Length: 412
Ligand code: SF4
Image (tube, rainbow, N blue to C red):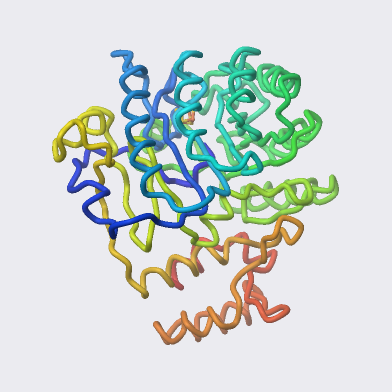
């Protein structure tokens, strides 16, 4: 779902705990991401850490999450501007447990004006769930719609009824949620440009504030990739995906949506502030198995297996509330600049939401100083019309959005 690859399924075991790598004291973070790994079915394209839990460990999950919240409360400095509860399917938690998990997370929030998003599968949104979200203080919901064609949902092995999306949005509206995102996927095998554009039109008709539209990607080891490798279907060509993307962009622009990132559009001033934290390379805290965090210059991933996470990764006594982590990276200027370059160039607009497209001249200079060959890559990309220099900033052009992945890989 919309947590930009923050949670990749893995069997890696914990190597340390967060309290052992962070400097002592409190740390300023802009946002917080919490990961709930449960789903009622595994969609075939999905490589997030999510699974159908035959052992019904929802209650112990919430208990452990509360312990991590206690640790976070002692170590976070100041106000959280955003909270994002993703998954998995957070709204799959039984109502009493969902309310308990949200109440715990809410205790980290010092202002009700912060943006608080919860991801939902449309089939899991009931009036009771919508009211629990609102009572906790959630003010934004992100729904995985993916497509409005039943045959395309079937190709993705996505288990929800097309009509459930509008029904879920209606229930959320009635409960008081004013900011709704829908996720859509284009480039589904067999999909035409007209169908992909019609999906976006149907999302707009529902009356949403925000849309994320991603080209289908074939991640290693997913069921969809195995079917592709078996030759079960033909993937969409790059040309067709580019045509779909252009058509989707034009429709959204005509309908008054502002594009602020390669795959994200919003009504004016309603860009997702949480995602902007990632793209500005600002710090955020992480809770829950497989969640990635960036605190005081340290990057880490919470151990990505529920069993390990519940037991502290076998590294800490059970009463240690600090998350067990893997993939820890200590602060490093070169890495930090590479990451900031990669995410900063993904921002393509969004002034009304406080976003600025691309990177400024000072940062560009720092990036080139650290790796001089970037200067020629940038100049070539400008000559090829992929990058633009505009108002003292370097940014992707319209054409650049189609080839951004290759360019960013070269730059970092
Ligand atoms: S509902 Fe979302 S997180 Fe769960 S399996 Fe499907 S895509 Fe993955």
